[in-house]
Image (cartoon, rainbow, N blue to C red; front, side, top):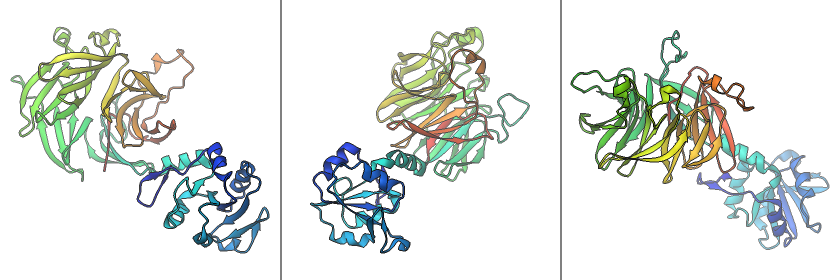
Length: 422
């Protein structure tokens, strides 16, 4: 893939079989770019031995010279391009050449392509040049004497994936966050609040979540989502296995959905419900243990649907281990099976990572998966030959090509959630 003049992706890559089928009908090939590596390798794999070649290059140092006994010309000779008998193969960095070819109204693949010799290199360039910006949340403590603390502490961070840079924008111990209209809503779990901020990272509102009569809600709110059809927010509390419902206008507590009542018997969250998203009038929730025994070592986690009209719970995916970040992407359910280090599309594992993954976003081309420092190393030691990656950061994954890049975030420990920032 390459980026055209309009900013849209275009396919300029052919395989050798298809390219040879095209040039079998041609009399001449232009090799655009005098590369001492890619020109001879390209010629060696073209099967039409009757072809005539001309090398095109804008470098004035090559003017009126030859390479491999092939004359080098300036690209302006393409103004007399013979559509029926000639073809162009790019043998240099394509993004610098594409504008010239497109200005001449030449069409990708029909009139030109990039040499298949550098297809893998081209895929690497594409994923490196992807300009998607992200914001992500971290729940780190600020006290380095605590286990889940870091140098920068928790907050909302901005990440430029193309430049491999990130910076903190807001302080806070934040978990899941969502965009509603033009603002962002994020759970601050220690303060038992929802903070609202705008695209300039200015805090607009702070809503108290502890609105029960006793004001004794445990400080472990985690997931948040919004349902437009009901104009209500839903917020999950891992310590009580309850989902609280708040109205949009005043953020007033309306009701609660009890996912499990075992926390009332055993004094703390037993299912460990965490992140939420919506699917129509239903909630999609992830949790560590459907049986409510994760503190007893039973990690039969999964994804369930809660029908908000009647609070009926339907189990969708079981057998996961500490899952997080359920998302509806292009109408499909995706989830991160955090401890097993996988990205799951429904019940199918589609990608495998090397660390504790949490936080999932998609920009239409690539997935972005957060990774936190792994605090469960003993579960892996001696169990298999897979290497466990301990540092935090964000993977940019092109799943169609099965390639990824990694933005390391060494000054924080945990990444909880990710959103595309546009």
